[in-house]
Image 1 (cartoon, rainbow, N blue to C red):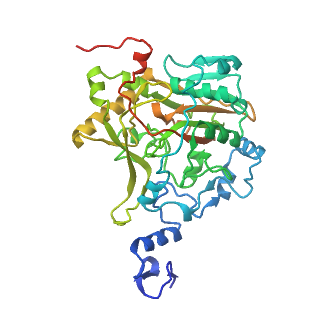
Image 2 (image 1 turned 90 degrees about the horizontal axis):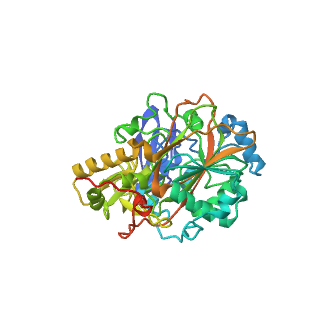
Image 3 (image 1 turned 30 degrees about the horizontal axis):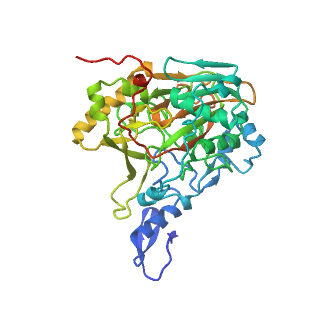
Length: 445
């Protein structure tokens, strides 16, 4: 008979478990402390990581992941002086992940200084555009590709102008980039406060550089496949979202949510694995004037992607961090209004009934997702050996989703650095993008 002693104290009670295993339950220690110790001591328990992916719960560098790492990715990381010999990626230690929702709330709960780099940048972007070989607008309203510049070599002035360009065009792309992870990290720190995630894998030795790697997650137990990859886009409450195929905006549950996100892919399938972005400026301008007036000033509840336990009701089921932000927010650099909702993580609108909230939100989700003229789909084509491709987007004014049509037949690996921005705000004097640019706005009879 095996015995598992997860708390040592004088006053205990023996409880029979599965497979003839017994637990010695301590009666003079608060139940939340007992539960926390149980979770931290038993790696097979999945509480605050992910219910659909079985990570290496012991924490540290994962030697099994290193076996899967594409050669191009490993070469990029090691050339940056990062040691992956013990494993890749690195899993945050189980001893440090938040178990209870109050612990998750406490992470970055205080105001943090933030400088919007695009606010005082040259609106003509002469330093950035002047050094580029070519500037290509991929659609009329969303997405720009810059050719002939290396992100690792940008001056501060060029970084400021890039921030403004992203704030205007939603997402900006750079191919053929020789970009070490540490340089990507430095750029993220310049653009805002880097988000250090308590649960998800990151580049070994470089916290804050999150690993985007569905091939690894599938090896660890994710059930992502061709049949279920997009089901959450019909009903995110009933259908679990595997990978990042559901429309979403990063880190909306934060006190100061995500601003700029920089994703760099160093292993790309020959075909497939695209990413789609949609503009919050365009979504807002798709609405009628009367509906805009109704939504302006409204607030909504936004959720964390990860779940936790309620310390006061630990058996009451998983809880998420919930924070309240404006439903329409003003961008500090452009001064334009953006519709700030997403299907994956917007729970409800404050001040209306649950039925009204669901009806309104589902319509707003559709506005984002069904209007092709406010979207851009980017093909991550393989680049020359030793180089990769970067996308930098602004979460304050966008949603995005991946397309898993390559089904893992070829490797797709990237590193992501997210810069947290300001506390979201709505300025009633701000204008929509079309209004600010003098474009016609349809008046409905």
